[in-house]
Length: 152
Image 1: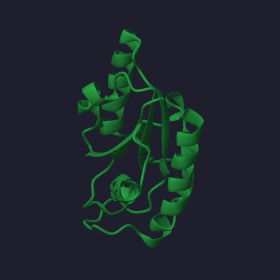
Image 2 (image 1 turned 90 degrees about the horizontal axis):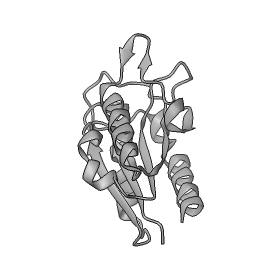
Image 3 (image 1 turned 135 degrees about the horizontal axis):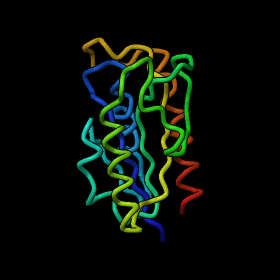
Image 4 (image 1 turned 90 degrees about the vertical axis):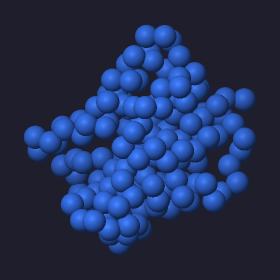
């Protein structure tokens, strides 16, 4: 049975930037198969090398700044992830990409898929998602479940 890691990023107190945290909470309430591990990693995904390395598949869930409309649901391969948008670099994702490249050298890097949404508001201190982004939780969880079925 293949091992799948769902790593959820973001800051729970930064409005829509907490999207991954909210996804993790929902997933951890579900009865996931025993080969699925779900973790809420905040901004520290690049510090989970020992958890990532050797998994068969990793699904990274977060917000992804983009020129697309807020609320757009995205599913991307690593090479499709925009690390700099409007001159601002997403440093946590940059560090995660560097980590994945390092793990790839060992030959133990999991197949990686990025799933999430384009945020509407990230510069507000709030534990709540904006309604537009909160409404995307079920769609993103469905996408994650599809990825689990593909990778199982």
